[in-house]
Image (cartoon, rainbow, N blue to C red; front, top):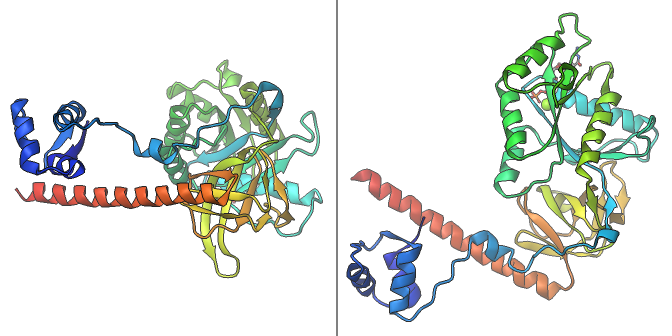
Length: 375
Ligand code: GTP
Ligand code: MG
């Protein structure tokens, strides 16, 4: 990989670009002013001018002192799995989520209208898994998933891939399978719309087998469940299977530490100001905590859960909206609770500066490309 150009290297060392080009030439490298140099060349040239070079990736630099605290085994407690529902257009993702959510609100839990916050937590009401929770990420399809993955955020523990039994495996189904497999996330298949007279779930099993995915009922390792998001048939069993996958993962977190998590979405609300939906991964977030997310920091003024209820604390796997950040961080940004505002400000400033530099660098590349194209 090439890093910076001869001209950029010269300016970093405060020497003329001709001197850098001359140094390159002595090594047998004929570099032009805008030519980008590889690591070895940069190192040798820099040495000639008495500079030592340290290569730090942008990501490392941003997270320099955000090293994960390692929790002691005895501090860890089981946490709810975080589940994303994916699948082809119209196969019933939203309907399935709606059914699951309606069942929950109907159970008489607090607070009338369920708010859309992009993520919500569901508690199993009966059966062997009674009392266990699942957190659903209501990310609209692959885009958000891909964006988050590109930014290094791996927050989904299990993926449900919905396939309509009156349609079978489609392009976006394959895409979802690829995404999940590349991310190493276990999949549970929901064979949906089995209430329809023309439903043919065996066609799905057959088509999946053609993709090298053998479902459990055919002797394979992938769990599948026939469901109807309309009538609710099979939904409880589907959730049981999701919980089974989750158990194998032995998901744990330490609720008794400063919270760390990921930003799901953020926007500017006319009445409330900047509102960020975040998911706590470990620790417990509290009202009054100093939160640093991306290049923004602030004290949590209020927290609202997925039922629209104001809460004071949110533990592992709990999604909440927070008020108090002075801007909108990006989906996939990590957040950390900081001990002091000074510390938070320092890192926020560094990140802001780095973001600015990176955007300048990105702009420069565009210019170079354009020049290249004209030739
Ligand atoms: P996109 O968000 O557009 O990708 O679609 P989706 O996967 O969220 O599908 P959605 O839930 O919007 O459902 C598409 C259509 O299928 C709607 O008309 C639903 O009412 C219908 N549908 C979903 N699930 C079922 C089901 O189990 N049975 C029947 N009969 N219809 C269903
Ligand atoms: Mg939908």
